[in-house]
Length: 131
Image (cartoon, rainbow, N blue to C red; front, side):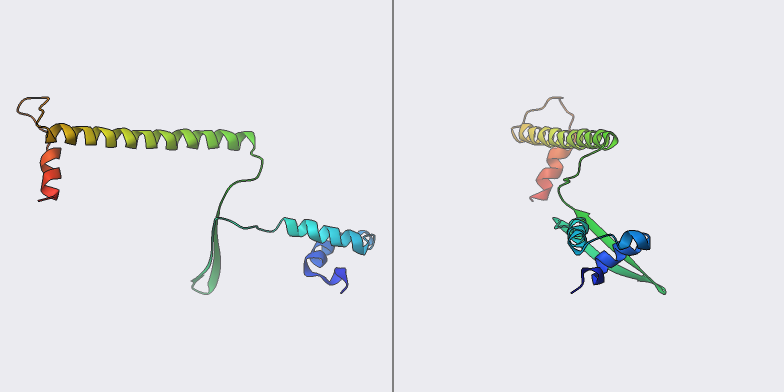
């Protein structure tokens, strides 16, 4: 098979002047095909592809997720750091709230009152779940 008949190579060659197209050897085109193929999508941890029909038009949807192997720009590094700080803060807040709730439930189960005659009502709601 002639390498110039390959669709990927042919598409690549069509985007350049005819006199340049003719300067490539078959060996060079084979290596270009390998390089072009290396740019194709690889395996992803999350790979969802679908098509939506909307009236007479069809739209494709692609959702990919996985480990980023690219080098990040400075702006991307800052955004990444900001997101890490945000999600770590949210996780820490959820853990703190969970710990506080558990400590409050243990305190209530032991009958310890911090404020005489006052209750948040958490213990009574918790007990009603299991009755």
